[in-house]
Amino acid sequence: MQTLLQNLLNGIAAGSIYALIALGYTMVYGILKLINFAHGDIFMIGSFVGYYAGNWASGKLGTTGVAATVSAAGIMILSMIVCGTLGYLNERIAYRPLRNAPRIASLITAIGVSFFLEYGGQMVFGPDPKFFPTLVPKNVINLGGVVTTNYQLIVLAVALVFMGLLQYIVYGTKFGRAMRAVSFNFETASLMGIPTDRVISTTFIIGSMLAGVAGILYGLSYPRIDPLMGILPGLKAFVAAVLGGIVNVPGAVVGGLVIGIIEAFVGGSQYSNYRDAIAFVILIVILLVRPSGLFGKYEAEKV
Image 1 (tube, rainbow, N blue to C red):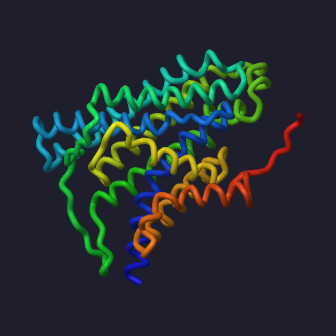
Image 2: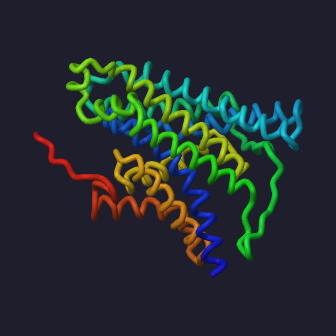
Image 3: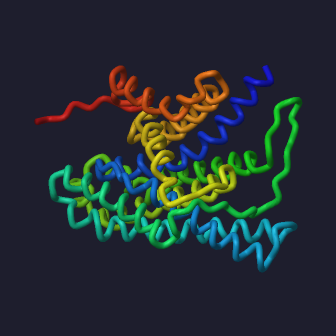
């Protein structure tokens, strides 16, 4: 029973990070029907912002006490700002000029932007792995035989806060209504006076900010980072978005948690070597059995 609970806790912590990244895929696809393959690399940029800012802050403010907590929160906000700006520039420079082009052109551009960020990151940050700084002291917590750390609890708490905030933005604000209108029908929303360009740019910014948060949480949980680190978590988050229903915000959260939990159980079994492959097995099964995802709805398209 303890092993079951331990794997479940580990899976929820990892799945929360996947869910934050998956939300960016879901939001952009819902608006533009575009798979933004550069999203995982923006997540990588968020981790490196945390790496450099964390090293600077630890030298100036230390890693204990209230100062460490304040600096960790400031580093997360800085990562969100940098990633949000990068997401805006990505949409404004790479995707907006191709909005009326065939969809394959935007897809190829997304792959190109992904490679640009990955290998540009190698030029700027260096190809060697780096170790994420200790933003707050790490403490081991024993919960009746189930071992966790304050890092996992921080990941869960922060992820829940931002997921709840996004849910409120999408379903409880005027901007959220505008975003859903653009997602439903781009041309009609534009004719009704909705500033579609602004809605799309803001959607990219919000999704990229969530990727920045995920980058900091990932650095806390798995402190070894490198410029190519966004590839696998980004693909797993994409699988999570497809699993939940690619245009469904709660579905992306559920998909991320499911991927994380399954990975944790596979990693704790004799088939641990196949841990990274399991996400893609799930993707194949979902595409074969329920292409619209767990919470998605099938919509017939006129051709």
